[in-house]
Length: 447
Image (cartoon, rainbow, N blue to C red; front, side, top):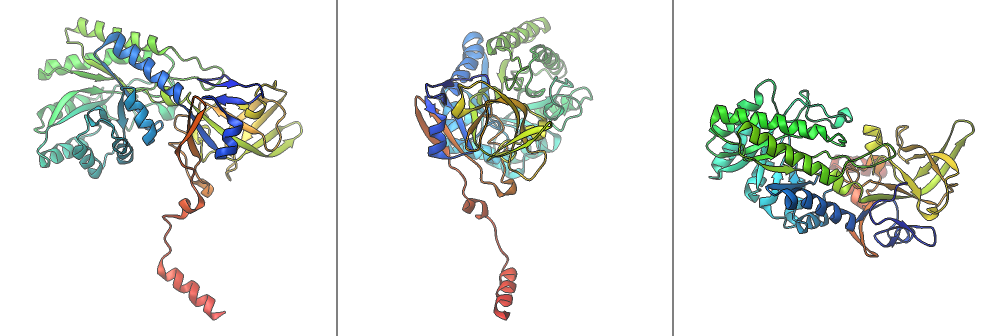
């Protein structure tokens, strides 16, 4: 396994993250356990800020909170000077609970409810990204009721297919997100915003997908969006002041992944925007990017305890852990690949090939197929790397499993930032109708 961030192996042969021995973390907090490396998070935030804002200026970096959203994470993002992308009332509530500066909040989503838009208006978030014609009309009407003029971006589907899994492509024409560019919907929406009494058109937004390695995709996208900006000015006389190019910057999960440097990404995007705007006779817009996975993903590790083992001679050896698709659905959803290490035997060389399975009642509950590890026995600890993005945020109570705790580690200190769920938490919202209780009591009495 490639060691990420502050990971190291100590004299006892144990995996250490943020100065904390993972064996001791398992003993103190139990497993499954999400471990977030605070230094790694902050380093990546600072690299984004340096590469885009400090180096080039006229740019803003916004963390996509859907990746990993907790109150503590919002505090870190706030302290590092980044903005925040939210896509639901729950994510907005989390940001507000962290007292995140509302002017740095961007509200996304393809089906915002009236209640969510009301909350965003009451909170006075910095930007609302309009995604469809219904929302355009609804937001204008709600803003009128609040006697407000709301700053908005218009989400455009540019018709660009990034080379990534089809479920996480978002820029192609056949997408549920945004206004389609090639068929004219995008221009009609932009003109609708410009003509609306209570909406202030600030610019355009697009997002072509996630886990993207080819930087040329971003350069081409910037060119397409600036050509649209030129068309907007020619047809309306209004300039695009803000160009949000979304996120999707790829990270290392497993062998074969080859992510670019953040600084190279920033240089290419900012240079492309500047040169293309100049060539088209446009003022250079403020560039906004929305990294999420690349900030949280490498900083996260999930720690499991090994339980049962099943060896089918000549076929496969299964190693079951005490978690699975309930805390990491990505392998089942996207065929995502991960690396792992036996945390209590981290210095030992691999000697056997096994497949890591979860404990859910699904044949598809496989975390890693065919990985080389030292000899594994029940009670060993398995650490799966790069699980900080979309694992906690997509976790579930399938099979009524309790969601794991999340600890933030730094300089040898571990702090719980999300408490482990209990079985009482799982049934907390369950309600039994009185008629069922009455039937139960009658049957008991009849016996």
